Length: 66
Image (cartoon, rainbow, N blue to C red; front, side, top):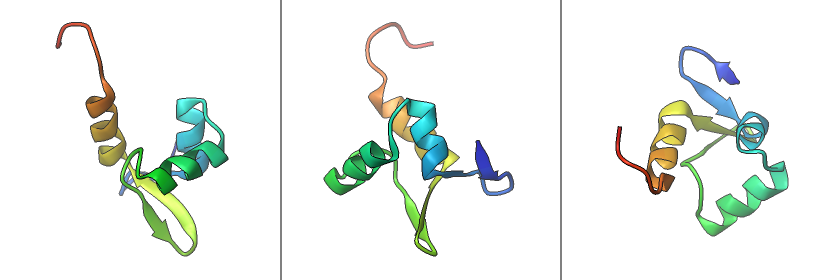
């Protein structure tokens, strides 16, 4: 999934696949300010794994903390 193992960068397509969403859905999320923090590098969108994990932690609901 990561495109750069040293920096743990994840492509827009890889994140869309992880969440079972389309790239267009990811674009809508960004336009609304929703989703993980992203970076635009040379016209491409990337996400840091630590930002993805932080977003997922914020979205966690219910159950008991582990």
